[in-house]
Length: 83
Image (tube, rainbow, N blue to C red; front, side, top):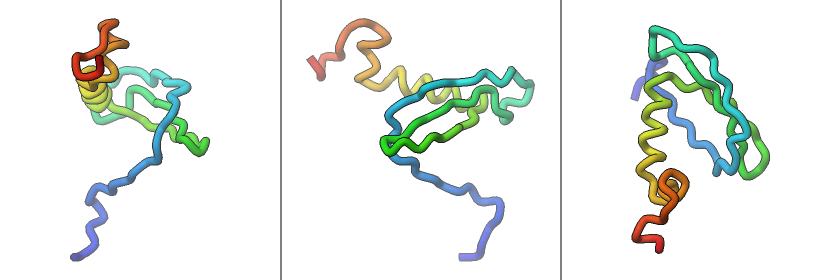
């Protein structure tokens, strides 16, 4: 397969155990520009700074909102399968 310098690069991070901070970088008209920078800390202590666009932030929130362990945080109850 020929090398494509424009192909996306998939990176797998180790288990993230903390999100100590997030910094609002401002809203932009172009949603591909970062709007928030999230600091993530892995189980081995490595810190990653991840810039998220508006669309990526929305997708992350929607995904987390549908995650069963998050239901207790959002709604104060456990989903049926975890009771």
